[in-house]
Length: 175
Image 1 (cartoon, rainbow, N blue to C red):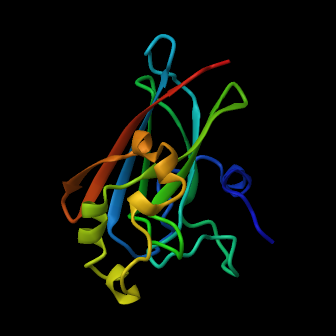
Image 2 (image 1 turned 120 degrees about the horizontal axis):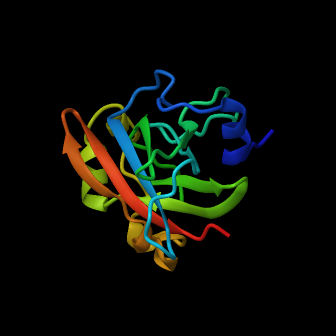
């Protein structure tokens, strides 16, 4: 059975830590949601994320079970949703990415993918468990989704301890 990100995440309820103990380089994901018409934060938006684990497997698909690397958070008064996860792995034919949906008032107001700078990914993939898989086969410049506007969804990534913090501001239309 193939489950989409929203379907699985809806079953999870709200949770900040989505790792479920899966290995990988720690990643704090900081997603800010603003009303595009006012540039003001949207409090209470539901931000839904999902991505593959460090070895390129999605939970709930490809014969795997569980709900690792999937979750929903509500934005705070500053429009921020935080997730504790791991740096995503890669799978054949795609660059490294995280899926995201933003729900406001029960409606999906944004569906997209978030991308990482290739240089950061290269550094992460020299570490275990990523290094066991060999070189990835797709970089941002050759990914069909990235080349069609993905640069607008590039995460700002900064080193933090033994991991990273990745952030982005997403402007959405409420109605």
